[in-house]
Image (cartoon, rainbow, N blue to C red; front, side, top):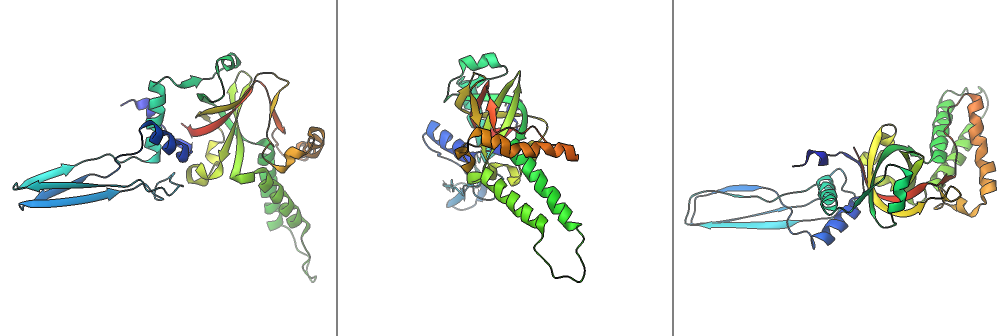
Length: 291
């Protein structure tokens, strides 16, 4: 066994993994557990079934990949063991990755010169540090600070409770944040190094335990398929392409979000705000993010 394939997926799009493996292997034929039984009669049969369902860590699809096995033995005493392999979504991903490696289908990217050999539709594996869409990141941080401020806010005594201005702002910021996560999707930015960045459109429910905070800090590997390549610094990938903000001109967006950068003057540590990723860059549909 190749120990390099003992990876820990933090993000796994198991729908893609299942579909690709089913295509490669012409469908799944066997997924079942080990069954051992003793036979003391002339004829005895046993049947066992297994499935991959919602009990698995990454099993968000609720797919039943079941099979049944029958064993029969006549006129003999003793023990018969029927053994078949059972896979988890993570092990199926390792199987898919190993197949792609054996067929030399995975391109590697470490510097901008490698972009010349990469085409849309090809499999690619990169390694780098990850961060959320900076606009979403700063808005979520601001919402948490405002919620904390509301908890410690003094309420005037002897007066009827009026709509709280802080709560109104939180509600507005939450609506803005939800719009930026249109379709339960969020862009991650991977800094590959040497000035190359990759935009990774991810689905929030494919993260381990539905929590994407694990990817912050540290270096991770990403396996996926290339959907767009930008080599010229004048070209860019729009981080707001899937939201209603894509209808607004860039100059107006820069003015709108520039106020978020000014929060540093108030003592807040804010990331660099950008609505676009300039080249050299590429967009990758991630199959898995793993260690």
